[in-house]
Length: 356
Image (cartoon, rainbow, N blue to C red; front, side):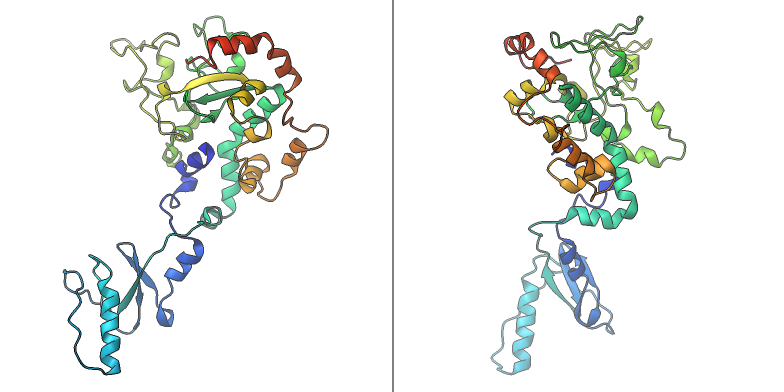
């Protein structure tokens, strides 16, 4: 799911990417005999048996098994069993006074509770802030029946949902472009002096390309951030049409090649396309629409956080999913029905979408 990857690409996902055990396993791994704490050595949890004895590292060689003696005393048998357990840990350096056991990956890691525990009360507001533009774009799409997405051509999901405040490669917002009429996939800029012939989405926030660490800078101004080409010039310094050559004097860049990756799919900007579709088009292609288009639709708690800022508040979703203003599941909106006639035939003839 694109939203999950974007969440873990943000600062909210730090410390969770390599999490392979559940919170219960984490807490248990830190409990040794007699209340001693455990340590991690090459993926193995080592438990301190004797708190009074300081652990001393053994030789740099891996632990080996000595031949078993013929003595049948209870103490010797226990010593042999202890050495056998240690010998099973390949290439590990076990401190003396510790026993070891492997860390077993959890069958179902509870990542959301761990994220709540790590970030506390700030988790929900920050998640809502991160996905607020997309939730608004999803609600706009559900209301109008026009879905605008940014994704790779072979994807069945959008990397980013595009709304009226999303930015075009020309530097102007979608709301400053002409309205999509269902007859053409090219939506030119409506401002008089702009040369843009077709809206092409470009990330306008550092979080959308995984550069969340910029927010930690004291003097960082999010409004000044721009997506850049490998020539180190911004998209606004490139031509909005054609190959999008750089217009900076002295720069020999003839084509815009992004120096960033989409944090939802790890692919470059030029590998994506901006798609204008109706609900009927998405339904025929097996692409989410209606209430399934909402961010984190499969995860109710995160979906509620994105919509209302509270994981246990599903009031807004209930209004969308039931009642007189319910999201149509099988029937597209009236606007989509008006656009699905001639436009649908043209869509099937010329292809699902046009790449910009």
